[in-house]
Length: 469
Image (cartoon, rainbow, N blue to C red; front, side, top):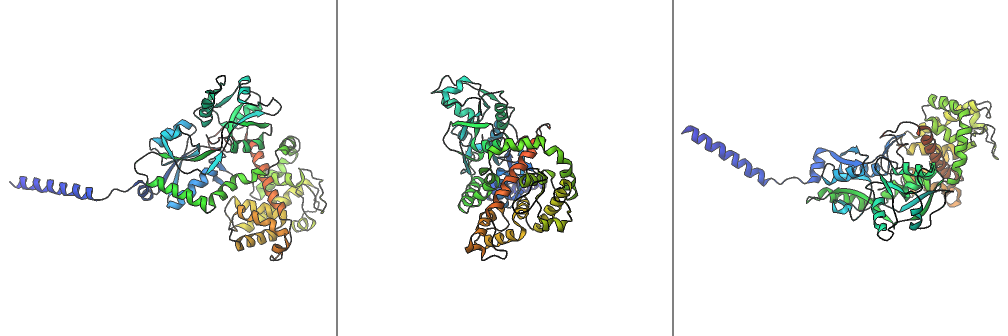
C-alpha cells in the first residue's frame, strides 16, 4: 500500500513538473545566442571578407560581424571554410547562425537560405589580359578558354546566358580562388574568367595587366545568408542592425576603411613599382629590416614609406629641401642625430625612429587607424593632424577614425577653417593621398614577398582574391 501511494506521489510530481515546464515559454534563438554569449559565423578567407592582417583579424565581413556581435553583447565564433557549397549547406542546415562570406543574392540560393538586407553592390565582369585581344561580346568568349569557380554566382550567370548564347562554354574549378583564376589569365594559362568588380579593383594593384572586357550582370547585392526557420528572432535582429548602420553612416565608414584608398590608386604606376622592387629594393632591404626591427615596426611599411618619399633613391632632393631615401628635413635629421641625409643607412634608421616616435604619440588609437595617423603625421606634421582631429570633432565626426579625419584634412588649406586651428595652413590633400599610396605599396609588397610561400588558409596575401560569389 505504501509503495502504491509513493508511486502515485512520484508520478504526480513528475506530471506536475512536465506541466510547469510546458507553461514556461521557450527562449527564442536571439535569446539563446545572448545566453550562450556566442554568435557562430561561417566565412571565407579573402581581402573582401576576412583575413589576418598585420594588425590582427580584419576584412569587410569581419568588421560587420564583429559590430553585430558587439551590438548583441556576444563574442564571435568564426569558422573559415574554403568551399562555397559547404558554406551554403552548413548555414542552411543550421550549423551556423550566419554565413558572412561575400555571398551574392540569387534566386537559386534563396530557395535554401534567406538573406539579410544587402550591405554592398557589385557587378560581375569578364576579365582578360591586356594585350591579348579584348573580347567585345559574349560571342567572343567562344574563341578562348573561360574558367570560373564552381557553384559560384558566376557559374549561375553563365548558365543563364547560355540560353541565349548556346555556343558559350566554360570550365569550373573548386580548388582555386577567383584571384588565382585572374592570375592564370595574366600568365596566359587561360584566356578569360569572371570576377566581381570589388575583387577586380583589389587585384589590379598587383596585376595591372588585368582588364575588364564588359559586365555580364547588372548590379548585384551582397548579403549575409541565414537558415530558413520559423524562429526569425535572430534574423530580424540582423535585419534591424544592417538597416540601422546603413542609416547612420556606419556601414559606409566600414566599407571606406577597406576600399576607399583603392579608388584613387594609380594602377599605371604598378609596373614601375614592381620594376623598382626587383632592381632597387634588394640593395636596401637589409637596412629596412634592421631599422624596423630596432623600432618594432613592419619593415615592409618602412620600405613603403621610403618608396613614396623617394622611389628608393638615396640622392633624392625635393624643391623644399628635404632629401635622402626617407626625405628627412634638416631640422628632423638634426633632432634624430642623422648627420648625412643622403646616406641610405643613416636615413633609413632615422626615418624608422621618427615613424616610431610619431606612432607612440597615438597610443589611444586602435589599429589600423593608429598607423594611418602616423603616416599622415610623417607627411604633414603631427600638429596639423591634431588640428584636423579637432576639426573632425567640432563637426560631429569621430577624431579617432582615419576615414573621418581624412575628410577634414583638406580643410586645412582653406582660410575659413585653418584660421580656427593652432598650427594654421597646410596642404591637407597631400597626406590623404600620401597614406592611400603607402597602403597600396605596402599591400603589394606583402603580396610580392609572400607569393612564393605555400598557401595557408590564414595567409591574407595568397588568399587576397576570393570575391563575392
